[in-house]
Image (cartoon, rainbow over all chains, first blue to last red; front, side, top):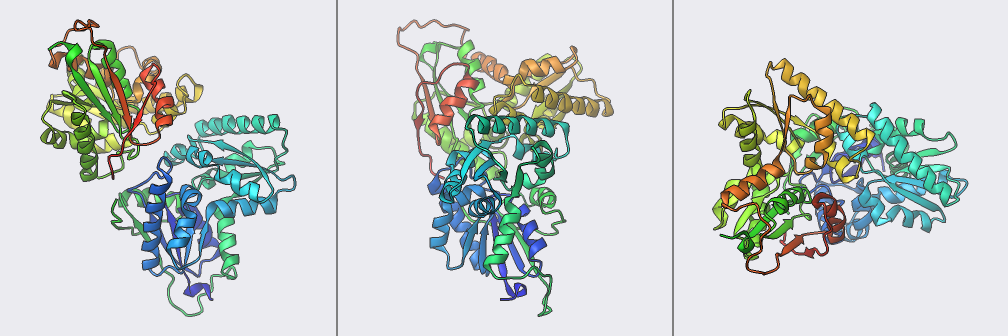
Length: 274
Length: 274
């Protein structure tokens, strides 16, 4: 299939998944994209598995109704708690950011020891640990609850953020030293964290490589669809990028532009109930 | 009415309202208390007025069903968006933290110029500005979105929090200088902020007095109920303190203990739907 014919649906509870869309646009600019941020019902992190599955399945149905041929679950909580439910509910292939992050870690690590930074909800679910364990890796996870609000405050290149990262990473490295593991890979296990990638790399020893799960996801989507990296548009139809949110369209445009790295001209408000 | 006979219902979307309960317990220890944290549906801040009103009214109905004689809405968003809806829906008196904070600011200020620190959602609603304006005061509001996550991370006496407060307060004071107002009072417009009161007072000029809306609310509840400050328990019945949450009872006990300043032995999980 030519990427110019593909409609790729990208789903997150909020804006963070736009970092995954950004990576997809760089790698597969020829596809059409439909992005849904379920902003009225965020954050998913504190909610039960049944509730997250219900929200995520209704969001996936919406994207399939919009003619999505392929779904990218660019939300760590939904990937951790609802991937099977989504796969059971829709007739198109579905990929989630936790499996793509764990796959990329497996490909990158030589020691088999992996560090994961994520939100408290993702760490509590131990979904990355489980996915790493399935691939024969050992993982130590660290909840970093201040990083999302720091990114949303726009304090990316800010001394406060540098200090918070220094504290989180020194605690994580101390924990891995106590566990006597030798990590050579760190997975950014939250779709907000790619905005802090440079800061995190600067704060880490050079021996530890950073895996950006947004980039990892884009690479694996391209591989799964057997699509070349290309901006070819052989059929001459313009590529479409459509954005939907369930609340606060203005906030979506303003914050979303920062995550996507380009202006978002129009966001359509939709009602998924609940 | 003796406070030992009163059942006071206290409602918040989460844990922050426990700072209001803490102030109530200090001032009116003889009353019975029923606390409800609607943790499954938090945060209210990003939601529409209709949704917040629906959630808050169902929570208020629950407290009245539990025999509450008086309701304290210890949630800034619900106080801003749903106080009238709650008053229309229940047959008991209802007081909200925004009106009590504004009343206390009115009593404290000599210049008539007030500063307010609050969450982004509360600032966006301009409910404090409106309440201050109704009382003949001028107010400048400052959104401080990092303070709730810093408190929830437990970083209360922490250099990062000191630095974040220094930045927020210097921006707020600069804005008030540009507006040529002379503030002598600052309202803590979020139920998480009383945990940072000492830090905030340390970072402010001595000429600015801090109003803790939790304390202000407790004082006004005592005045409204014509109750003396007393721990008398003349009827000999034990005082009851009951805690209900709509999600994550374990998290409620752990985080809640920090806000209440004493251990919470038991939290009952309830289902309000939604």
